[in-house]
Length: 352
Image 1 (cartoon, rainbow, N blue to C red):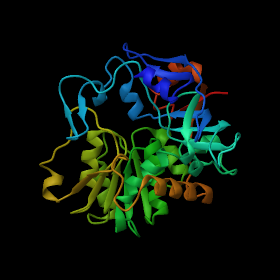
Image 2: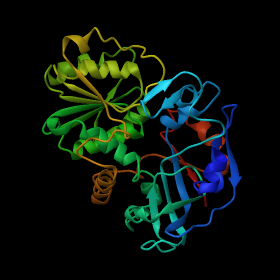
Image 3: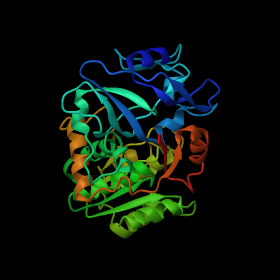
Image 4: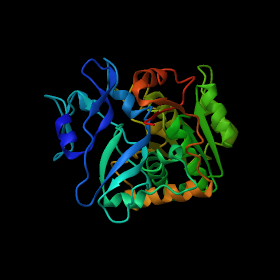
């Protein structure tokens, strides 16, 4: 797998990978040369996904691709082998600049953003011209323009016309939750309540103008919200934490025949999800809004354009969200920092 990535020029220079022990390391690979119609991009920043990428990390890594085989024809996971082999390279939040070009419309020095691995150098094709980073945005903004923003816009798209003039609830004040909450507000939600158990993250949500709701062990979140807003007030809740306990609470929070948009990447069996309770009695709908299944009214390019519009208009804060930045050589410390969610919201890797 690594040899194929090197041969295709998808990775080069300092590159993050996870080895069979579950440890993360920074390896070095040959720098690729662009062919006709290609550009060589040097990363400036790549940001670690605190959700999906952490499922690949550690001895007890839970990502299904490490344990079962994905049958792309039948779209089924099957027993008998893994989809991914070690070492695993990964990443999808990146921003950099063109350092060598053999493609029209992309001169050396052009700042670009997109979805590529945690690698210092990568080859892209001429379609990257659609992902140029505007002068008013930084590379810290850029790491979330290509994929993270579209993930959240896609999630909100599944709410369709239910947001306008109504309160909505977002479970999880991580990066996905905070961006989703902003997109929901821009989409017409009357007010956005953001639920989390970590006070530091709730403080960030409050700074962004959202109603922060602490999910303490002693608090019945759905009860408190319904008592304050009304049983039929919340048409949509977004579950962005990846916790099946939170997914159950989102089901309890929406009104009868309400919608829960499942944005998180759920691991293992669904502990705490009681489908005989409110889901059954209130006729609640649950839909998966993963970016691999873009809403039929959109495509990825349109989601990226809309993310850019919101960011440049000031309605969407990306790089302004709290972020710890570390040199790529310190990737072990970077992943260790993400084990402290009460202190660290997200981590970016620098290639300067």
